[in-house]
Image (cartoon, rainbow, N blue to C red; front, top):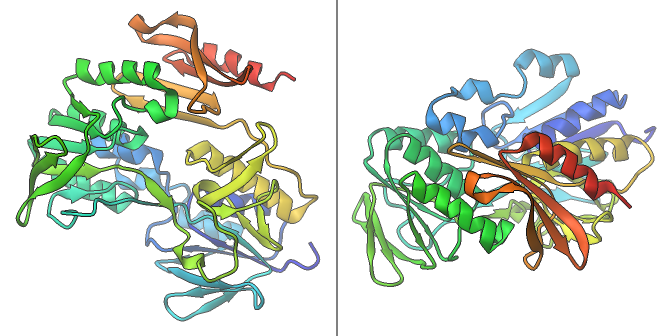
Amino acid sequence: MTDIGRVVVVGASAAGLTTAEALRREGFAGLITLVGDELHLPYDRPPLSKQVLLGKWEPERTSFRDDATYQRLEIGLRLGATATGVDLDARTVSLASGDRVPYDRLVIATGVRPLRLRQGHELRGVHVLRTLDDTLALRAALAGSTSVAVVGAGFLGSEAAAAARTLGKEVTLVDLVPVPLSRQFGDELGGWIGDLHRDHGVTLRTGVGVRKLLGDEAVTGLELADGTTVTADVVLVAIGSKPATDWLAASGVPLDDGVLCDTTCEAVPGVYAAGDVARWHNERFGVSMRVEHRMNATEQGMAVAKNITGDPKPFTPIPYFWTDQFDARIQAYGIFPPDAKMTVAQGDPTTRKLIAHYHHDGDLVGVLGWNMPRELRAARALLTRD
């Protein structure tokens, strides 16, 4: 570490903060600067679409650390600062303010940006859900709403639809894909999630896209591709996201659906990536992956810190993620290729308690638990067998 005096982390996220804290644990005594474009202290995102949206948590509860912790760890915060570029030769990060922040090692942890609909997104009552401010705006809108449309039946959309329905709103969940979460878990399990929503009173309009948003100044609903309409005074657009890499376009940092890294999460000499924005080759599964899940942000941040301060080692996690919807907690380990074969290994789908195995090319690559956390921990061990 003799040549490392300054580490700059761009992205005051779970991955960014974890990297900074792990650097201190690994004995790094140099300058650490954590750059974030929001004004909030780094906070946890998974509760936004659940506890915060439901009003069970207030915003401050999502903060990872208080001011005193950053002072004690001597982590310099540059909040409300947007990174606009990187000069790899000069080893500096440019900020929108005009400042240039020098680094010896750079960690990119800028996460993702939500996608938006092309037409009508500017109408009052149309929301995305990525930041704490997004969540508070949506929570306030829901308080005065009667009918809600959620466009996108992935993790975020399904969770938000469940939260809105729990708040007593009339909820319609819309997606071009016929089965909710089928991209993530396949048609059969996705169908069971769809049934869960129907049983709780959510109207599903799947297998049909959105033609346009309706309304003049404020949204009044959706027109779908089949010509039918959905009434809504609040619309959440949850159609996916893209890596927040626009600021790196002219930098020379390799980009390909994220920051393209080697097995150690290094993109170019001295530049690393962690969290949702990082794409790397996971030797455990033999695939290139970019993982938009909370635990990966933590694990990857710790791995990057170790690789900066010690002998670099490949990052080979078994991805873990979960989703909470109504009374269902669905947890999963591993990877879930689109053509994987799913079998129920334990439990019964009719009781909504089960363990599912996913096989791909003859290998067990993923395990999933629906309201069976203890059994899922045991099933995870199957993925570590040689």
